[in-house]
Image 1 (cartoon, helix red, strand yellow):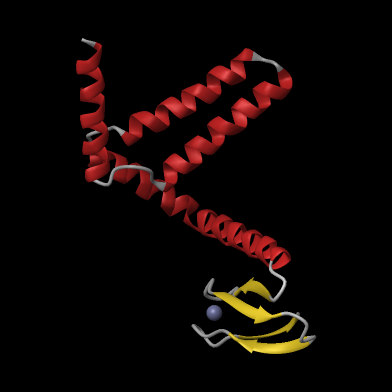
Image 2 (tube, rainbow, N blue to C red; image 1 turned 135 degrees about the horizontal axis):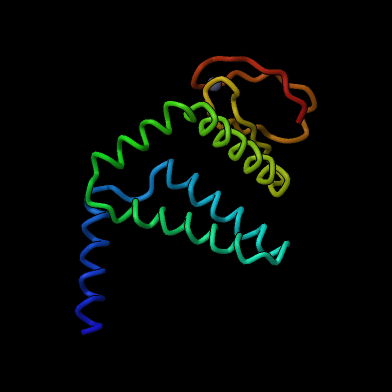
Length: 145
Ligand SMILES: [Zn+2]
């Protein structure tokens, strides 16, 4: 009996993945809120935040496995219409931070992100001030390496 449900669950999962329903931007956001609530719960020791956190995670899973793809896509489109710029900006910040950490680890090169087109540009270290041109959009920068 249990095995039957498990295989049904697997089928559902494969179905969801095949149809590319999966994870969208709205779900990333819902997951983030759920995570924040769980963190608050950890610090405040209030169970209500645990419940809130799991409620958000549950909504996220329901959306992933939903078969009503049009409705889910509409929700995501609506979200992106209002939050598109914010999502873009947070992705940009994430990339900048990632490249900054990579620059710290790398002894020979430093990495920075073109603020115009988000292209990652690699520069050899220890050249003092250099002017660089983005290979993708031709914006020029003066960088200290
Ligand atoms: Zn560029």
